[in-house]
Length: 353
Image (cartoon, rainbow, N blue to C red; front, side):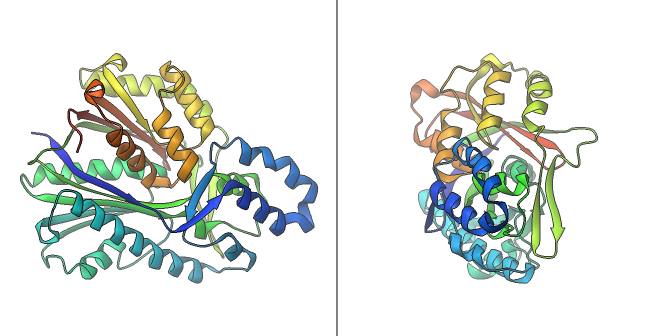
């Protein structure tokens, strides 16, 4: 008995932000102190793989100091709206009624809400008073795969019931305009805002979630995450992420596949979370993929940026939209996040949903 993805939908804010706008904003913010250094940082933006992204706040929002309270309240307001829109789209695709949802699994790492966003959604949609809720915080970019895996586990434990999964990230509120570190600059070149929603069940027509797994590297807590500072959340990035992928990821992937009687040659399509262009380059090298094989991930990165946990569901949605009979088969979905942890999911797609 497999859990199936019955429907999937995505949502972004209305504000489109080009990479040129980001560059010009960074120059205005840091030019007085770091004019010469800024010019040396411009290649970071040009080589990021990002052409544009969408944000809940305009770039000039960062001209003024924003404290943690303001940033987080902006996160809650916008995250809730993005999720509402994504859920409506997701349910309407398959004419699923909100009253038929029996559980919610939610993922987010770019702000804190207590009660959590899923509780706000239960209230907004007047959902069942007996609904099961599982909010998950801190998975970062791995949250799309790992959160969906937890939702699949929950659906499998409730045969025939429907589980709503969503992830939402408002990365834009966390840019630190008083921090000229390379990690902060890299974050400003990559991250955008977005939300995704999916409905899962053991019954109905959909995409089979056949197997899931995760792997956490030893002594890797400092690779990726947040640093809590007075003005909010400061990004932690290691330059060694592509090196770790090249060194270990093929072996880890092979173990996951072998445990499920599969090999790389059995994978029809690859759905990796695009941490950035260098991460995708590393994955192509590790998997010996021909140019264009990771096109879905590159296109989402180009047009939406890295939306942390939500990104991989945007990629899956794109792969489904481009699906035809020649692409029937197994899809490997992967993502990397704080821990340092990788999530794996083997999907079988025989029909467009």
